[in-house]
Image (cartoon, rainbow, N blue to C red; front, side):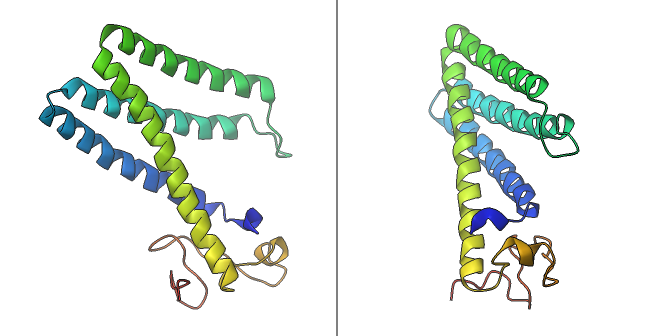
Length: 172
């Protein structure tokens, strides 16, 4: 049922995650200062930034190493992923060793990014599934690919515009 999830919504998920990271980063720094651990707050901010950068580079690597037939060149792709994750891990462990509060904050920021990304993805998938069940979204690939001339609207408002102008009203 979710195999027809529109790719356009992936960008929306990433943008919402980044916006959530900005808010969480500012809150982490403020809470860290209030609790007398400003380095922990900075570490969370650093972890969120590292995870966001890694995610962006992941997207670019996927595009760079994808062939025209849709397959990925595995060796260079895996090498780029391992290199990025290795670098982030080395930085986090070095911070844990030299500046413990900042290191724990960075690990917390890395985890927080993944939680935010998964929460935003789950929310988007859940909304899309509700639209499908309500009959307001394509029910199968044939409809989504133009067999019945159904066109997918660009994300608007909450990101789930539906035909007929009933945006986001699948709750009823």
